[in-house]
Picture 1 (spheres, rainbow, N blue to C red):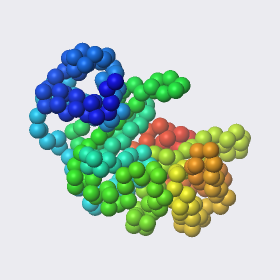
Picture 2 (spheres, rainbow, N blue to C red):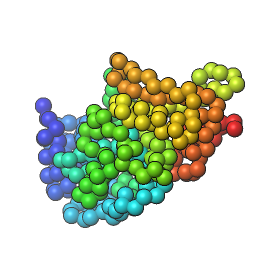
Picture 3 (cartoon, rainbow, N blue to C red):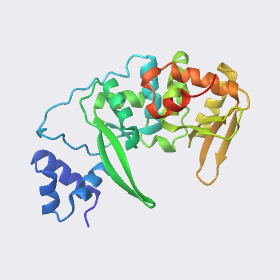
Length: 271
């Protein structure tokens, strides 16, 4: 049975260096095309665009995109803190989303000035198959910069308070980015005002910091912190109209930078 190390070899040697088509590699190693594509996707190994040559061509990238603070920069840092990851073995940044949000990855690539393409593939789960989209960018400078801003390898399991890394004037934008990655907005069945908004993370310290931030800066009330023993997740939620309206205004200030799917819901909130 082929293991992950073997797939890395196939990718680097056969696909990149030797320039073999995916179908040829799959045939030579006795597997289906889709199996090979899926495995490369699970390992965050980007596929070439049709007609793209192999070799040492360096893709265009603004690896200093996170050097200067701005609202957009803080937003994307927050989004990466929620839904991205950095890999030390390849000094890379990766982001994986449901394929229905693939257009948001295009926005991130545009922010980074990257010519990379979004890769979409089918991922098998216990309950079926889901279409996923991802990007992966390897760059030492970008990797080091993200590390300095609190985005650490295996960050999911670190109890990191990201707000400690963010200048106060950009914390709103950072939290909107994080919300687009790991935030929730739903309907709770109340006729007068049905919306409820929240954040979730494994880091209880960060969730407490998020609650304290909104209560102190934006005077939120009735903000609950809930810890799930089963999933070991902490969440911060609020449903009062005053809180939701203030948050919606914050969110919409960033315009088209935000996630289209969530923005379409927030735009329906009746002020």
